[in-house]
Amino acid sequence: MKVVKKALCSTLMLACAAMITSANAQTQEDTTKPRAVLFKLHDIKPVLNTDGIITHCDFVTTFYNRSTSSLKQAQVEFGWTDEVSAQYFNDDIKIENQAQPSTNSRNKKEVEKLGDITTVVDMPSLGSYKQVSVKSSVKSEKCFLLLGSMKYRVNSCALISSETSDSSSRRRTNTTAAPSECAQLFEYVDLNNPEYHDEFKEISYSEQERITDDNKKQDVKELDTSYDVIVKNFEKAQNIIDDIQ
Image (cartoon, helix red, strand yellow):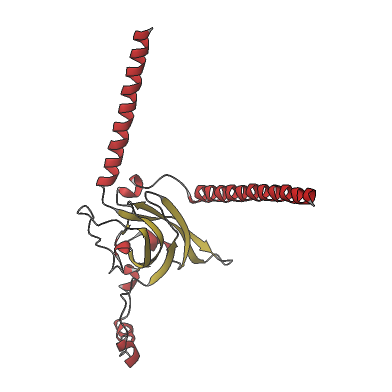
């Protein structure tokens, strides 16, 4: 019997050791990847008016925080350019549009134009190694542009806890000048990037909405429970005071 117990203990110890080794290996795999806030666009859908004409493009932006820092908030501006249509612009129109800037505009710092079609997406708070999806819309009839190349700029960004930059951080080649180290974390992942499919969790926007709604209901339930406890304690205290009187 003792032999059986020893064998069982040895098996359990080996199993625990294997689990710890596997967990450490997984952690090591995550930490060796460049720290970044990856984001991608998906679920792009045209919105038609009553006449059947496309007026808007709905889309979902999913952010995945692959870093040990938590973000309080961020605002990212997207921009697209219809390069095909731009080839057919009249040169005379281009020259006419290049009017001399006024005195006020000369004194202002010129901001790089991201494209003919732009929109802003506000990212909510995002924890370390967490993912969040944001539903947005852009006013345009050219929804196909959202599948192509895109420029972006991080207008604002705030870290809850920051970490020191390391040598594994890769250079962002498709982002304009970032206002802070926090903004430098952001990296757009397009359809041609393997990380588009590998790094993000398989969860739809509707599923995320359901989870968020369930969490809100749970919070409300806990608040109701706490309130009921407070009321009962107050009633007991009141009864004691009444008995004393």
